Length: 422
Ligand code: ATP
Ligand code: MG
Image (cartoon, rainbow, N blue to C red):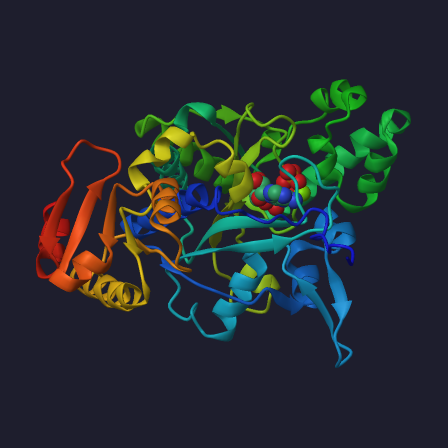
């Protein structure tokens, strides 16, 4: 026997046992998006590498070490998308969606990052993403955060997550702060680890995000970003906090929350949980006011967030799913070749009459006993039996596999009426 081929490390199969949970989350998310008037956009899995370099930033973790980049047969450098925002903006610009900007969009799909696989961190993972364009005020920031709160409620996980909030200020005030921070860190160079020394040149704000315990004191004592906000950003943030307070949403101000990517400004937020170990960020986002222009469009305010689906799914309690049962309701058995042909016909008639009916037709023949066993294992409530006797009299036997209804025989023409009433 030849050796079995395995999936690529960090790229998961989602098996039939698990997909109902995913479908539940996706269904709730779609419902939420419709309720808030957001429209879906789909874009390719592969883009020109340059797109990600120009938007995410050359010196971010993603572009420096996590992208799946390859040269295609034409010699072009392409990358599997590591996130959705850049491609979303690219698509909007390419198709003129931002000519009248006031867009509310969402997307859902796999992203690819060459990270070290571990629980909650994979090389192919799924994101639910939301982006808005053309809204500059804190009202849209509040709307998007309120939307996530509603999603947690719909999913029954509101008690498992907390909101962390910060403002990065304008690009300009961030540049000023960056210099102040670099000066401070340079004064304490000997305390920086190798990673931070590297980031000191390229992305010093990200040092604030370091998880290294030996650097925590240094980071705690660092000059605070929110002490250096420009006036307009300060007002924006204060208004956002007012709106969240008015909506009864609690949050933690976290001045160390900087996000890793170049394109953020002003509002940034994360939803975190302590139930998933080290990979506790379930949702992350913020304002990207400079991004559209950076990608060649007209300056357009933007705000977005992305939810990691694997992490979200692992927070969902199985009990939530009971209402969305996917097991078949009816299992149709057929004994003998003629009965099989008729059963197929009957099954189609039932599906015509009851489009939402979940009917499993026995395939591959088998004895009465083996077919009954399959019916039982399928989880169906009723077994419908079509053997020679029934065939001859145009009838069908109905057996209740779970409840205590007496076995009964009905005419085939009454079958859909029976199923409807059940
Ligand atoms: P982290 O700090 O965990 O690396 P990030 O800042 O790189 O996160 P984002 O780019 O903001 O993450 O992505 C948004 C969300 O997508 C994250 O909060 C997380 O839930 C999810 N996510 C990111 N990378 C991965 C991954 N490799 N595997 C699974 N989920 C991920
Ligand atoms: Mg990351």
